[in-house]
Length: 548
Image (cartoon, rainbow, N blue to C red; front, side, top):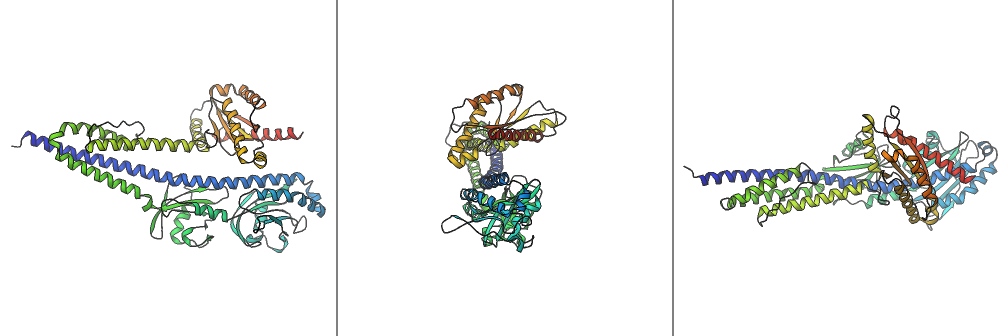
């Protein structure tokens, strides 16, 4: 007959093996989940950061060209005079030449800038074409392209003119070789309308070298890289294709990538494909220019850290099991209780409850104590990384208020409330006046200070409501509760704060408010749109008052 001690030892050994297996399995599961999530966040956040930098440049180009377009239209008396008087066309061109030159000189990557008038309205080389002289970086006025020499579908030579005219709205053209100056570029072109008639276009060409530099700057893992895909599915600056320009004949291995990017599934996360025999994971972000930034890396490199961690977990579990069997008789009571508590803690970690989990302290120097300390350190590091990533993801780096990501998340929350039973709320949209002028005259550092000054006044007034920076010079506030009821008083308080401010540069903002209307508004976007329209109306009124 087996002794009680043998039975107890056998039972304890079985429990130890079971616990070790459970802890190892849960730890492996948690490691895989956390590692996959971290890998996705690393690529996604890197892609978003790079896309944001590119979009910042694109937005500056758009703002510059749009502003110049308004200036041209303000100086054109009428379409009829433009058509009847070639000398008047030359007068407008001469007036705009220094203004266009200054805008190009202050725009990163600007290769050329041009103002062209409708060739059917005036002579076919009318307007301006300022191109950078590579030797000294200055801009020279060249003879504009004779639009009458080419067909409308000749994209390389005159697509920059006819595409925005036919579309009737501003256009970002995909990267193309401008055969007029033999340079690869992307162009932002705005059609000019006077009295409902298209009188020409104004555009800026950006040297594609800027895109190439962005691709070369991206370094992720060991061999990860970036490239661009345009709206037609063509690959640009793909470093592994062996070309510095684009990929017109897509290899079959990359067709799944094209399908994913051009498909309807635009969800966050990593997408898998095979390239040159390697399993790859990628993430992507659409850009203002109509292109898509893609960052990709081999799965083997992405999972290298995870695989090492899994091996360490398995080896640690095995060591603990063997050692526990060896000392079972001597430390039975000491081992069983800590294992149960550690198992419970590990289970909570596997379920994702690592923010509130409490790791039991084991006052020993054996493997159980080491495991306890390791789990404690793991939880501390996880808590720190989650808190750090969450704060960076939802806070604007310049002002410290909530950013556009937080805005989009809160927008989704309000949409859920509207779909069920929504409490009253309102949306205010602010737009800072004169930011471009401050940037152009005082520098971007003072422009940033203007943004922070505006944020200070808005946050001080609406201290009980969430404030968001939703654009370069735009803020928004969601009103509810007491702030909603006191909205008129708060607006007056903000107006007084602006009048009596002692800030430099001084703040001036356009204001637009809209209230949620039950039964009429089906989404948060409906309320925001009205507030945005009201803001632009207020901005136009303020501009008119300054003019008067």
